[in-house]
Each structure stands twice: as C-alpha cells, then as structure tokens.
Image (tube, rainbow, N blue to C red):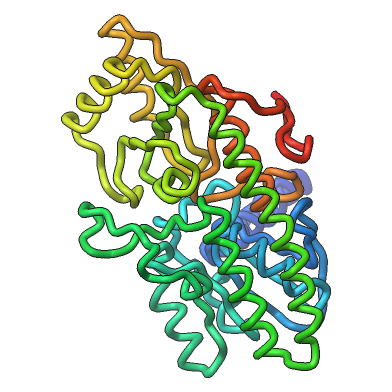
Length: 347
C-alpha cells in the first residue's frame, strides 16, 4: 500500500533539506580558510578604515604590514591583510581563499625574517607568476638584527617593536610602490613622509615613558620573546617564558627559573599577549604565590598582532602607544592613562 506524505510532514522534510544544504554551504565556505582577513584603504595610521580603495589589489600578511602599506598606498589601492586580529603569524597557514587572494593580487607585501614561515611556498607561487612580492624588512641592516642562540642562527623577526627600525620598512614600502606605479611616485613618497614624522614623535614618547620606570623595576616579562628589539631600543630588560617563536614550548625548568628571577628581583608585574596563550603566565603567577610573592598581571600587550580593526589599537601607532603606556604604568613609571594621543581605550 502506498503511503502518502502529509502536508505537514512534507513541510518538515523540505525545511530539513534546506537546513542541510545551508549547513553544507557553510562548511564548504569555512574550508576555504581565512584567518581573519581584513581589508583597508587609505588609513591615516591612526584609525583603521575599511573600503574599496583604488584600482590596485594589494595583499599583505600581518596587521603591522597591512597598516603601513595602506597608509603609503592611500586611495590608490585596496589593501587586504591575511593575518587578522589575534592570529599568531608564526602559526598562520593560508587557506584556499587566502591563496586565491595572493594569486589575484597585483603586488604582495610581507614582513619576512621567517615570521610567516608557513606561507613561504605560497609567496613563492606568486613570485613565479612574475608579480612583485616585497619583503619589507630587507630595508633593515643585517648588523642591527638580533640572532639569539635559541633561534638557531635565524634573526628575530619582531623588528616592529622598535619604531625607528620599523620606520625603515615604511620607506621600503614607498620605494616599492613608486617602482610598481611610477606615475604616482610623489604621492607615495608624501604619504610615507607624513607617516614617518608621526613615527618619530611616537618613538620619542616611548623613550620618555620607559625612562620614568624606576631602574630596579625595569624588567618586562612576557609570554614569549617578542620584545627583544623593544628592550634594545628603549632601555628595558626583557625576559620571556617561551622563545622567539610561539611554536617552541616552555619547559618546567624555564618556568621555575623565571619564577626565581621574579621573586629575587621583586618584579611587580607580568604581561599577557593578545596573540599568545596565557596558560604559562598563570603557572608563573601561581609559582610566585607559592614562594610568598604576589605577582600581578600588568595588562595585555600586542606582540605579533594589533588590536581590533576599526580601533586606535588596531593600528601600528595605537598598538605601540598602548604597549608603552601599559608597560610604564604597570612597572611604576609615568604615562597618561589614555596614552600619547589620548586615544587609548580605558578599561
């Protein structure tokens, strides 16, 4: 005997079919892979903007690179950053959509020094197509670079932590854009010059704020060793739980040694990082407590990624202003609560 489907049962069946199709489509979209892609156009270096920009398609990697490229390119291009807010560039792997964006770009900018090591092959594919792929850190003299023993001869890639060093990368972006688009060379150079003037003032602010920290407390302790250039430039000693790359693991002996150092030197605060797990930080705080010393969290610092898009902290200038202000205030120094430009978010 044939069984007829009732109207209500048929309706439920149709809804289930539609839901299943939507779920499959969502899954397939997710498989394309995008680690928080952001799109900017013509930012001022102070406020992250989104828009369509000009005719050129520029793809960048980290937020720090995206920010300076967007400033220099201005309205001449749409700048798409692959490594989004809170994403660790050491661990970033390009998904299908990211690879497509790279291959469709007119010009690509990346930080270099093995920071984005996992996408080296993808960048190579773009180069083979004859498109410009610019490593911005080639503008920095090799003699300046840190090469800690634990990094096996490779340089520390966190050069943006020294504003004066990162400024050279801005000049490299301007040079590359002028070579790529000669008719607008003057515009790129002017955008870069205006931005570099701001970076000079920012660099001075950081120096002044760090100098107010009592020398006995001038220790910056973080989750991983991303602040070596900050220490070198601004006169503060840095110790970290992990090495330069977050792919390295901190051993029990590393944590125990750090706990002893903190207690012995009475370091008041330890700092978490926006793109790094805080589990090791918790272990250090608990270890200090077991020794009768109260270690506080001085705040969250931006190390390998900037703040949220559309915020002041989501720009390179805002990121560094936040870091310097937070460090100074937490370690006994002096800094205005809202930072250099009075734009920091106060929690």
